[in-house]
Image (cartoon, rainbow, N blue to C red; front, side, top):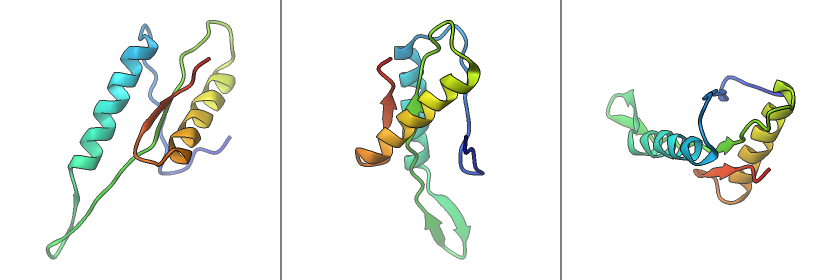
Length: 88
């Protein structure tokens, strides 16, 4: 599975799907509201697409990460700069 320099995984044990989405939304809003200073008076806006998946209690870490990755691509497909929660 691809995980590049612009991707990260956040593991939140004991967190509900709703709580995880809330955290993801806070991260997303924070990223879009804080332009990056490039120096010389230039700034760059940054947005993120976030996929959320909750562990089903039995799947492998790889399967969970694959569902989260698929959810992230759904966020991108539906317009980017958003959070998508895997319905499983």
